[in-house]
Image (tube, rainbow, N blue to C red; front, side, top):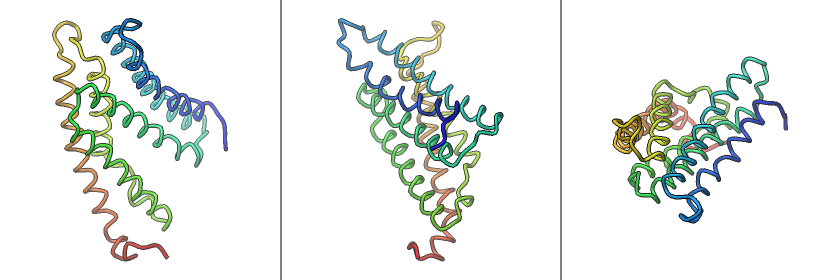
Length: 194
């Protein structure tokens, strides 16, 4: 397993995920809910920044690796799934929206794994729809974790809900986009590997 600064940052992101969840298990008399929200938001934002930064450093220092390419999206999916489960528990995200987003991540990950095994992983490369979806959900999650007015006039819950609905719509759209790209190979291989 290669070890460098970008991979260290990715592992840091994985390590931060339990903090986003765990802060809400602290007793309210230790940390009031508003402080829990603030702490979870801060940890999530730090994790999201490491997501951008590790990719930037890997490209700049030419430290890209197959392991890093595998670990980075796994860390992202764990981060999003963990935050969504917390938000569902806090009744800040609808169960159905969380199911759509998490379910799509599992389905597309499985599709990419299958495509990689048959040597066609480039057929399901990340699209611009997927990037917009990711931007929407990575903006929505900290807004929903914050769950308070921002700058006294931005209702983060309402704005976060709108962005999460947009992310869910784009999630379904991008899933169909990836399935359409993969469909010829699925038909050709009969849905089965040799």
